[in-house]
Length: 220
Image 1: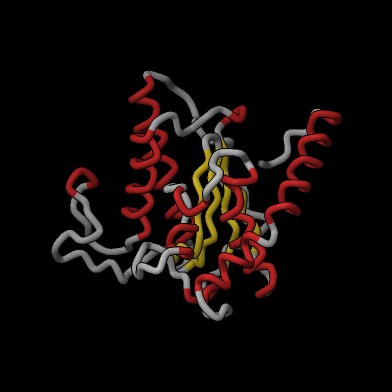
Image 2: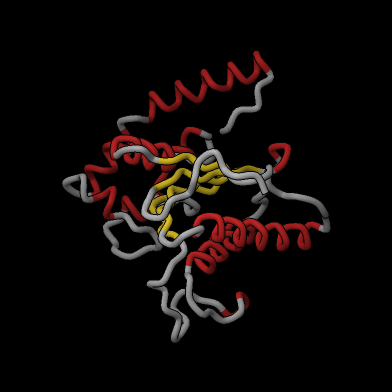
């Protein structure tokens, strides 16, 4: 395996993304989304676990405080996904993404009676250099389903961490304090996201015009 241009360093944050090979759809049903979500929960835990078929985050005697990564934000789209991850242990992101991708691809291929790779090569990793980039990325990830015309209401889109950030309920699977501690309350964060909708839609439109005119396969 070739060395990554972006080294993955413990304690640092990264934008992690990948999509279906040849832009194919990787989530075709509610069951697919649920499977990917559950697999994500399983492989972020770095402790002894029962077999996946018997797993629940609340399973007795699982130490869920031991993790390969911390998930700060995520979004699953029909043909791709985004994560904002903090690497907790050495090689944690690589381990997490490898196990998540391989497990889900095996499930998907069996279910759909297909063979071959599901995702477009190794995942892409972008190092988050500063706090401003961290905030902008969280907003970008959370706007993805709206800008991509998958939903009109981010708070009801189940396959994103945005409902965790917007809801008055506590809990969830994300480590949100690094983002939410910089706002007066959750409503302030919601406003931070909503204020960017028109600009994000314009950028998306321009990007697709460039892709169409140059036949360039950029990321969505």
